Amino acid sequence: MQYHSYAQQKWKKFKSENYGYSLELPPHFEKGAVVAGGAITYYVDTNLADVLISVEAGTFEYDIDSLFSQTKEHHSFVIREFLQKDYFILHGQENTVGKFYLYEKCLFNKGDLYSLRIFYPEGNKRYIETVLPKIGASFDVFW
Image (tube, rainbow, N blue to C red):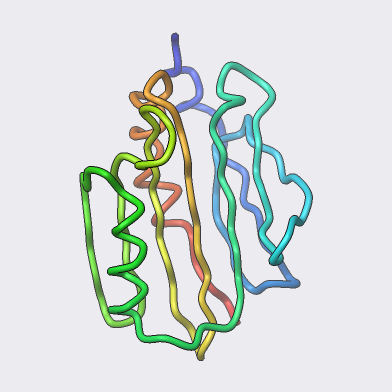
């Protein structure tokens, strides 16, 4: 698969006025429907169709360390972990179905939790991992 052409295109900025976050995605992603729990999905109608990006926002009642530990249990192999006082990042293999990867960035802001999740198969690993740093860095809360 050839993905280098995407790197030259202008990325799209998505801003959710209802949930108070923003993120940037490569130009071939579109915003999907709001699903259960207020999660918003982003999808692509190409050979990346099995890549799922979702953002969920809601009130959070526990401490960041507890959520970090619980979330880490969903990874069978952690590639990267980073924990700060108001956010964390976990990236690794997801342990429930086949060889899939999960990148998760959770931001805490004024008692609310914002979770960005990117779920992708081995076949898209090379491409997705080239755009993950920019997607993750762009994910922000503006409320």
